[in-house]
Length: 88
Image (cartoon, rainbow, N blue to C red; front, top):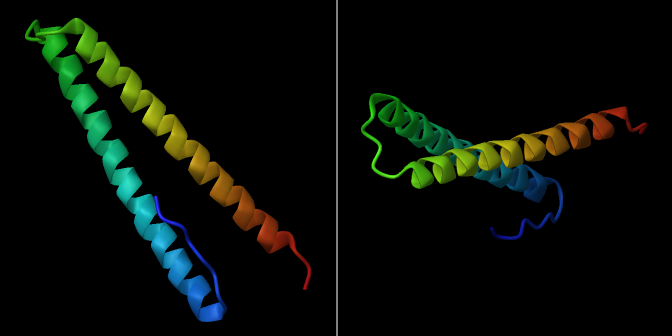
């Protein structure tokens, strides 16, 4: 993950764009992880799962990545709300 540097009004717009791109990429990765975990569960339910331990590991990884993404979203939302409450 690279550093985001802010240097003036034009840079802040660029920084927001970079954060939005990064967040979108992370969202896509978490979604793919959740879809893989769901497919693993379907295979397990059908009796086609090769390795129960790997299925459980994939489920836990998907859960943790989703929880992390939600915490980043919550912190970003809190920061936005704090900025909106600031008096000029």
